[in-house]
View 1 (cartoon, rainbow, N blue to C red):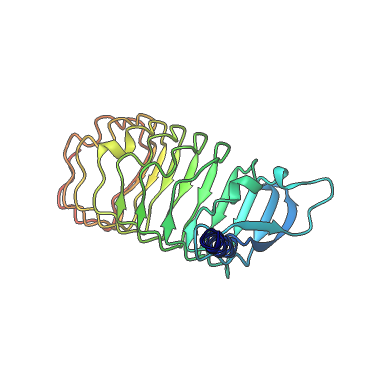
View 2 (view 1 turned 135 degrees about the vertical axis):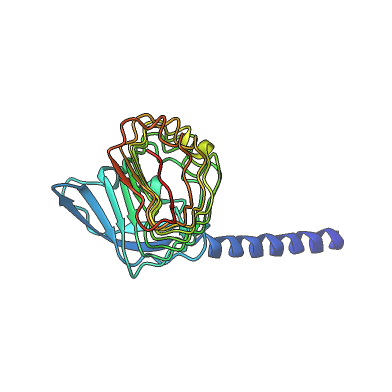
Amino acid sequence: GVKMIKILVALSLLVSIVLAHTSSDTKPVDVFCKYYVDDERGYVAKCDDVKLADQSQHVRFTGVQVEKKTNEDVKFLDIVPPSDIKFFPSKDIFTYYVGLQNVEACNVNIEKLDFIANCYELVNITLSNNRISEIEVDTFFMCRDLLFLDLSYNQIKEIHENTFSQPSNLIELNLSINRIEKLTRKHFKPIKKLRKINLHANNIQKLSHDIFNDLFDLTSLDLSQNPIISLDSRFFDFVMFLEDLNLSGTNLRKFLP
């Protein structure tokens, strides 16, 4: 009997320790946002003091809502400095803001870009001026209505080939000012509706002749400030509606008609 009591006491202590640890890990982080209605952006939540160091942290958005508006009405989430969030997204963003269509989180020190869940209605994602180095597999898999993606001014070196396997409606992709060295046809094949690609100022030396063969709607392509040495004469065979082409600052010695 005494032995059993000791075991029960030990178990209760262990449970209390685990619960205490869990509660400290999941303690909500209050984020104060300014809510207002903008003519162009709709109902906006602007947050300038988001401090998140761990992806498991829960976020509780606070602030004075506009009359007759709720979190469900928020269409535009704007996370601005001096916020410091290290990763994107936090697990709670799309739980609080279920109707989001636009997200901007620029210059807030994002290092890790992870799987974005429940982003069905997102049309625009802008994460420029951060420290993202890699785009993981299926990051945008659930962003089926995404039209505009801006990842410029980061440190991206690697993009997995199936990164864009799902957002088939994407029309503009900005990957300028990064460290990308290699891209293949598999990167672009699923996003056949792309009209504009900006790859300005990366480390691309070579592109296969068929890399854009699936992009029949492509009208604008910026490859400037890349160390590209040559382009195969077949490179433009399938981009028949290209209107704007920027090859300035490359190492091209010869350009075939």
